[in-house]
Every structure is written in C-alpha cells, then in structure tokens.
Image 1 (cartoon, rainbow, N blue to C red):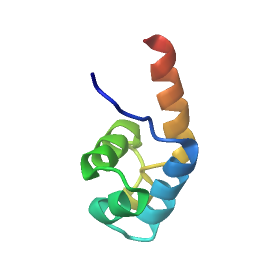
Image 2 (spheres, helix red, strand yellow):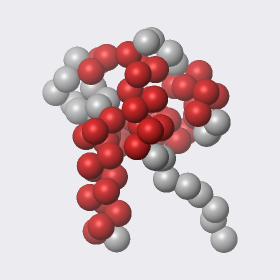
Image 3 (cartoon, rainbow, N blue to C red):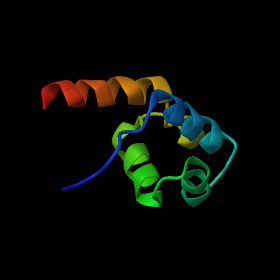
Length: 73
C-alpha cells in the first residue's frame, strides 16, 4: 500500500518563496522535509509556461490546479 501526502497550500507558498529566493529544488526539498522528486514534480505540473523563470511557479495557481485534479479522480 502506498503512503503519501499531498502538499499543503502552506508548503506551496514556501516553494514559491524559496524559488524566488534562488534556492535549488534539492534545498527546498530538504527545508520542507520531502523528497526532491516531489518538488520537481510539483514545479513541473504547476508552472506557467508563459511566465519568465522566477515567476513560473505561483502557489495560488498550483493549489487551484491540484484541487481541480483531485475533484476529477
């Protein structure tokens, strides 16, 4: 059986802030105590392709996308 947790809205805000501060995905993962692939996947799934690099990931947009995906399943 798989045991996993979804990222919380607070964690998503932390990811956004830490990305803007210039931290690597590995450093962000260590601070949030999650696997680095979790951060990579979160950023890949929930980043805007149109925005410039530091502004690609928005926590509020990511939360809405995640909620939308969870309602579909």
